[in-house]
Length: 392
Image (tube, rainbow, N blue to C red; front, side, top):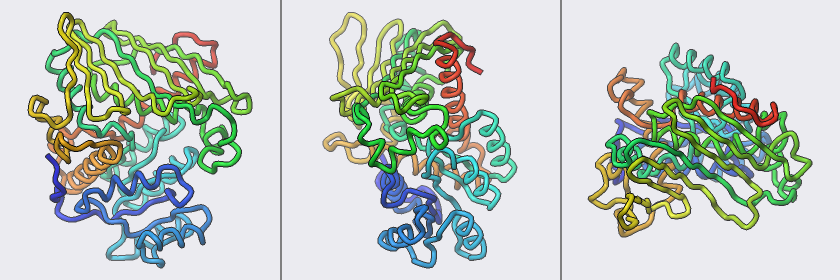
């Protein structure tokens, strides 16, 4: 159980690039990072492309006005001069900027936590991985609900053989909030998501499905994708060539199969984030609409509903619970778990503790690269007319 006690010697001096007043995700990052106030301390930021607005916002967060910078280049340069300068930075900016900011941060001697999708090309991911290794730094990726402890319960159940041989993987991340084009016109956060120059080669594949794909890899690390077939649509024509709906079929190397549906035009759906793993003996299912519950269905037996934080769960799962089974946890606790593991990974990297890093389950640079690979191959398949492509 986590109760806020420190896991590292002192809080890491932390900054943000982006995540300002008009951002969709900045508050989630701050809540995750500072849920345990022993892990991160927000001391600086380049919060907004509008420097005055960013400074006003940062000051209202309690950041020293002199450490609210107009841009990330100035922040990295000025913070490097300080004896108490930043040690880690979160990149919470539009997709097209992730690569250049991450590279600049690593070259400035900083650890990096980056939004997804990490970059546009696998080659960029491999380059950044090599740079991070050369600089002895951590690069983490914020796949939000992957910090739910029930992900670790599912992982342990698969590893323990509770489901038998894994045969099928069902993945869904859908909502209906972009069923019209209104948000494309008035929301700063939505405008760039449907602009291929900024968002990259995809919309919902990069914005939504990368979350669920990583969670499937976390739960079933033994499954390796062999091929994918993707069909994608732009039901709002102005979004083309970017998709607002996509279906993906998956073939795994061991003969298992999978299916993913990502959509932001699932009209009326508030939150359709669901993962189902089907084995030869049983199935498990998680929905972040009911994040404290896990369905366990054994063939020939009544359906079981497993509740977060109960003693019948595996120790690896309960090690990350925070509030006890009496009280509900959700997205912010999941983000907090991810950020706490980022802090533990950074601390371990600084100390040369490779054993801790080896055994720590969190979305690292390799998870980010696999997300890029996923999007690249899905787009490649869809652009070729919806054909099977090798996952490479």
